[in-house]
Length: 124
Image 1 (cartoon, rainbow, N blue to C red):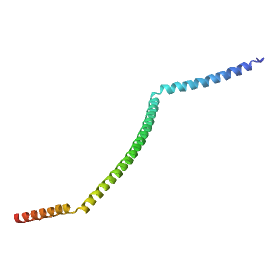
Image 2: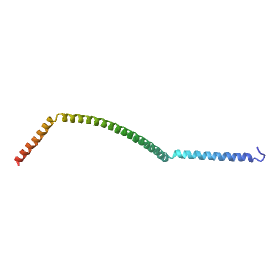
Image 3: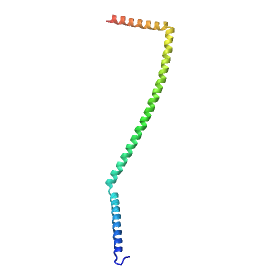
Image 4: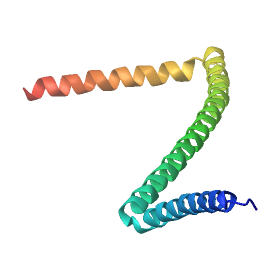
């Protein structure tokens, strides 16, 4: 302690200044809690951001599944194409080895068309 009392006065002033700063911060915090409109707006913004993130994750997941699905479909189409080509080759070989039944079927179809044309021509 000093003889003139200025040390105590300065200490008290410093303590009052700190108390005022703390009181100001406390008041700001209370005002922020009391501002319901601002709190609701902040809550809505946070909810929107969460929804955007979830939507982005969902889009990424769906795109990944679509890519996998396309890959599987291509693989299956390739396999089926190979099977169809093999069957067509087998049928082509059958026709080349024994063309008579196919020629008879073709002749029958031509005869049927000719008969239908004649019948239609007589109706007119």
